[in-house]
Length: 107
Image (cartoon, rainbow, N blue to C red; front, side, top):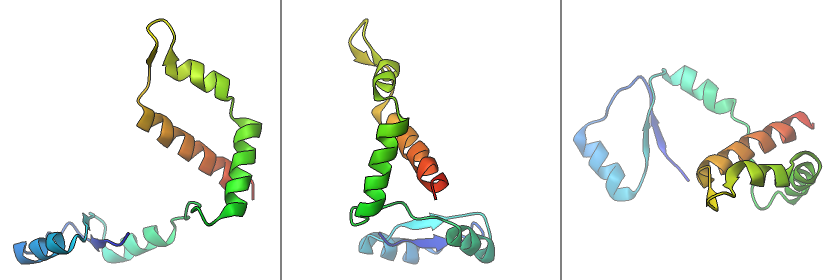
């Protein structure tokens, strides 16, 4: 997905906002200057995509080896009232962050 990043908290004119909206282009407003923003973007490490089968296999192995799924289920599921104690989106983000850290540290 493409987007336009607007630096220095400079909001564009209503014409540009309207054109971007009509074209379905997200605009991201950031407070940092262009150079700082570019450096931050350059430092982003991409997460695996579905085509990265080797990375996915490695992540699946790490989950099997390091994530106690039964314990996770106990933590997120309240058996007394048979409800989920945590928001599923929070759990997904939590797992993604921790799996990414494991992957990154595994070399």
